[in-house]
Image (cartoon, rainbow, N blue to C red; front, top):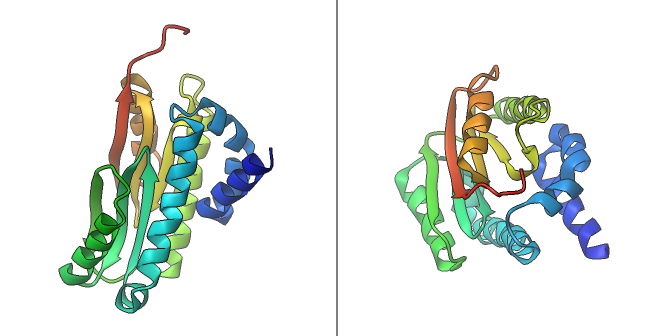
Length: 193
């Protein structure tokens, strides 16, 4: 039980202030309904911290970029901005060296790091997308992770294709979303519906 409380607290911290209330509301259900095993969920969370720690130890990456790694089912989504391809590639090599195990999806954009205002807006967009997903009775929102970076919404999860399509449609039709990028892994529909 203590591990569950710690994990839920960590997940809440990772999602940002505006999304914390929503994450708290569905956090327990998310862990139970997630298609990943509990050990995979814990491993993914640990890998998130491992990536953040490794990148923060590189002074040039820490000071000049805005790069984040998010792990889902052993696969890594790298997002953010780097002022040049040298720093982007360095960040990717660092993550490759961690040997997390899955595929690395490089979605780091070349450009200046986003401003605090843009990041705050991204948090708001994520909250709006999650809120709209919560209102969709045919979507199990606990199986979809939503991350917004500079107006681009990344959707992650181990999910059925029909559920993924519904999540994409909701995200695409949310104000403030410039682009939707799917990073889903698909599972077969369950027979218990």
